[in-house]
Amino acid sequence: MKPLIFKTVMMIAIIGMMGCQDKKEDYSPKKEPSKKGLTEAQWIDKGEYLVKAIGCDHCHTPKKMTENGPVSDLDRWLMGHPADAKLPPIDKSQITPGGWILFHSDLTAAVGPWGVSFGANLTPDDTGIGKWSFAQFKKAMTEGKYKGMEGTRPIMPPMPWQSFAELKEDDLKAIYKYLMSIDPIENVVPAYIPPDQIQ
Image (tube, rainbow, N blue to C red; front, side, top):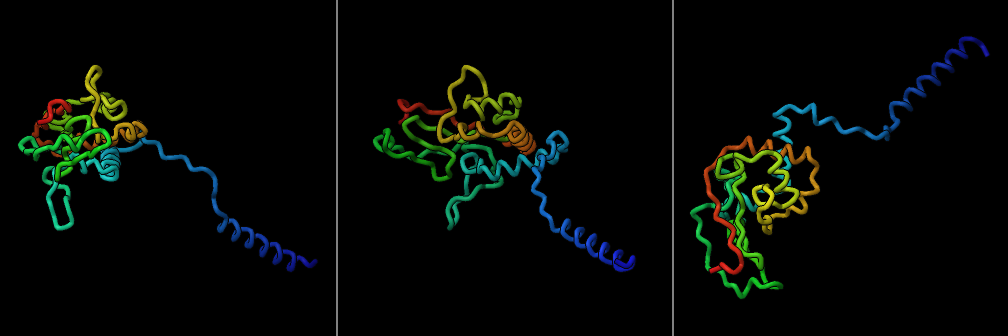
């Protein structure tokens, strides 16, 4: 083979191989970026994303009634059931085991065989979670302990803490950082009502 033809063939082969490499898919496993490198703003952004994706506002934010049903009142974001809200009369015959679970019209209060529970204030006000440590928050979210403290009553339905127990610690940290960054709202949520005290 003449040197010029050989060089031409080799160049075509090399260019062809380079083209194949460009199109080749990378199926190697990717490592998740280290969370340790996140800035405070990135932690908070991640927490906001999780809070909104999980739908914490459904039970922890009062609603405005619209033609499409209740929507979260952003001026009262995550403040829990309003301290001054009055519950409508409760027909106890409807909330026996196997009966109905009822929600207040703004979804921040629920009644069932466990009693009446109220969406907690998740803002960083002292009437919310403002004095909570991350350890308390984690215990509440993963063990269902009221105020995240040992020796307290369980957190009542419909709070799905059993599902939140599956969250990774980094996710819990991000949610906590976000909640501690939002506007504090003073609102003392009513106390849980056991079933034998329902009026």
